[in-house]
Length: 274
Image 1 (cartoon, rainbow, N blue to C red):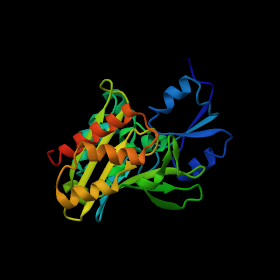
Image 2: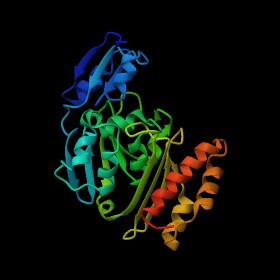
Image 3: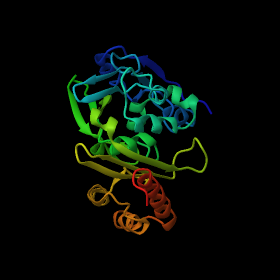
């Protein structure tokens, strides 16, 4: 199938974005790697697409004080290649390398992936684990920062207000030295994950976060287990991980719980052997 007819505005300023989104049934497009298939299948039928990629700063990466600022239009491939001019946390390069296929990574963007909010997408879990903050731009020109843990409200649902868009992703520079483990289970390479596990420990700040992704909703933060791991420097064991997941996801089927347990245990083992 082919998309229904639409117009395409390549916005050069935030004001142009706001004007473009005034059109009835308009929609933002970034890399288009998620929206494109939806257009082809006519699951989405916008009358106008408003492109963000040529907005100033959307493809920039900089370091400001203790924060790495990654423009929302930065592609997965640039992160994978480290072609950013700024050292990124090693976990980010690892995650980018495993997203879909190189052709997708060449066009897909970190901001577009987060805004799409697919539960099985890598960035929603990875950015939650790294305690990223999102810089959001409103139609009136104002900005607000929102922690990634509060951004995704459920499958394909976010805290973005109408006509608001992601301008940048911010990650603390301390995450460069953090200990991390990341694992995902897929039916085959390049597909969305059936389960994701991520662990980030930063001994210098005491930060510890254990996250289960691809749960069917927003990433699940297992704060209790992360605290135990940080205090004891021990793998909690498969039984403890499974119990924690069961308590948080009581309606999940046994297969899903097993996959999530496996992904989490593997992620932990990359930092602390069982």
